[in-house]
Length: 568
Image 1 (cartoon, rainbow, N blue to C red):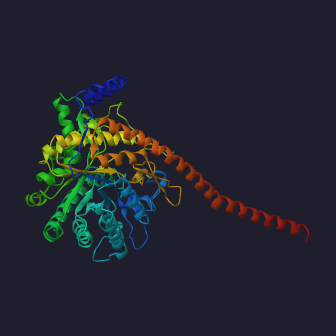
Image 2: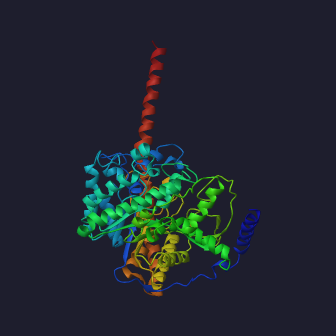
Image 3: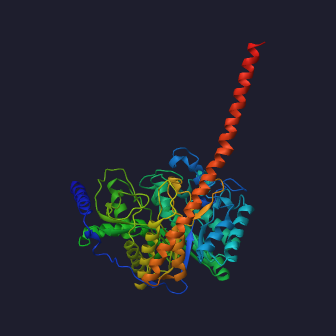
């Protein structure tokens, strides 16, 4: 243990010492040149969002509460105690937001359905909400009328609160049937028009942040066991929904069902060290492989089973904290994905680090590794999100090798800013998108089967336990303005050019996009400043002046009473 700690410090000191150097040694073996070329004909370009983060209207038109409604209404759970109660008012602004999609010239829009909006308690037999069903029908129809393909996620984290209270949410095996009922309702109501279904968006975060660290709803800290149990039920639920679609709906509706998994890339600190290469492999397997391996290969990764099993035995447990699939379940789960959705944001350097077995059991200590970053990597937004485009190509090639080159749609990729002032000239986002999309183009040339890309996200929105402090949107929202106006950032113009050109045709054309985008955002920023001033004046008019007027009246009454008493 002491040797591992010393090694971590030694590597970290080396990182800091070399950060002033012009060329960081760890990046020498990475392909860094920009590749000019275009994507295959028919490649899909889009943007994404999720229901809780954008819709608002949390208790309107028959919607039931979700775990995120309960979580955000508890003080101290979210930065500045902010909530998604109104979020972007997306529930009322569907037509406006579809106009933004038309401006971008995207092929598709990835959205999620709020389970409690169409099924308030989460239980089909108890209640359906026709207004919620109509809302999604109208949204899907509007998208199709504007030649935009809907890609629909059934679950982007907003579990009905009733199911959490009654059964413990994803800790309970009964979720499998309740979710399957919900999924089949969606196939029944929307499947004639929706041909791309995602069962779960980033289930890693659902399990780890919801049931291990408690950072996300439902906020449970079931260290060492909770995340594994939640993931186990989610994987089995996904398989059941895929089989339901395959058996009941596929022949008639001719759609596809997949899952969207989010993972960083893990690069060995020393690529010549087998120990570091093994640690980097564990990093990927404990993130991506945790869910992808059962679906594509029939069981959890061997390295997960070995490490969690050994740690569990050291802790005196009779069985591993990582649940097991029966032979029948392995067969049932394997092959249950028509495509793989991939969310990817950043990369880490990884090395071996052993944790004492007497320590409290934790998903984070099970893989025996430590994560490091290169201080030269751009970090335009939150501390966790460094811009490392080359990691994306490596992740995509890993998927190709590990899982038989499945059909891939990139479902989430983007970068946020954390500045409090309005930032419409988001040059860092332009550079991020340019770099990451170019790595997809390189991966296509490697033979990776990528068919579409979804920039994350359309709008600035509610960012879970970070509230509104992080902004991933291509469109800025002034949340202080009651009308929640949308303003295009420079990245809108740039991404639009990538879509129109279907890639990066030549240096001269690509270079011109940047200047045009910056010129456009400067003009838009002046408009935003003017609108913000008007909003401020309206606030003064609507709140301050009435308050002052009321105080004047009260003071006058008090003075009048005082005067009358003295002269009575």
